[in-house]
Length: 354
Image 1 (spheres, rainbow, N blue to C red):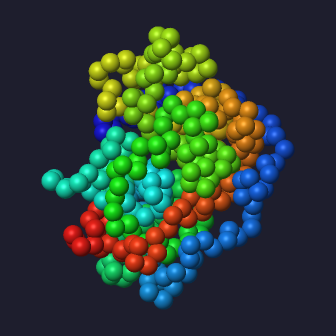
Image 2 (image 1 turned 45 degrees about the horizontal axis):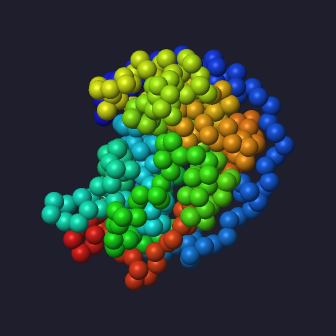
Image 3 (image 1 turned 180 degrees about the vertical axis):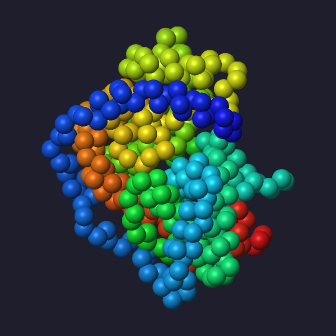
């Protein structure tokens, strides 16, 4: 990744802060339905996951992982959104089972990381999970799964960036396979419509409120230029930018992302106002037509999801509550238990290969 270019892009887009700030002044709508976004009630146990799963076998696992993520956050802030993205990509393909962490091997069958949807996943995310797993192994060998380490690290980074701390249920097993054929169609795309997004989420047992809340993870992190070129140069074959994107954002993005050549490694922030802070500015940006991806902006344009966007834009506390509830639900997708899974020693290698 060309970090220097990425930093310059960030500084350029920060000039749009005034517009985003005005959007945040919008008055919130009545509270969302508690059943839709999750209430303050303790979420039910699912698939045998529990907060005290390692109480006897590795009681300090949360702190061990937290020590690693805190150090990594100081040295490499980009690792935060990278790990959060890893967690999403893992859970949405055959469940939260660390299958995304299996590394490609020459001469071996392809794995999930070989697929186009995963090729731009930042190495900082993989490195962080490997470091956290190694620290856990040094204290509790052969006990804690990579899937649980990934879930814990994602939570830690949310908090380190200013977001909520929330308890993570544990007890996942690592998948014995990594199935590249399951990737396509399982992950949202940069230009997905709301209908397409709802279908993807429904396939994971998640609803519209989960879609809106989890999309708030785009309050931190960066996207490669390739994901926005269509919106800023040739929207739906018109050879013009998306008319619903703020003109100043179009101009700023064009300065960093040329229409051809030179932008393959350049990144731009999802949240143009507070790109390094986990807050609810992402939703205010959508109100101000500052959504980076077409799939993001679509949440404000669609009547089914717009009220939720406006509600979360007006209340950071509600966003945090909704996000935590949806992360709990996402983290429980298709959990591997017993002989259906393994506990890897090295997250990038299956147990028999380690």
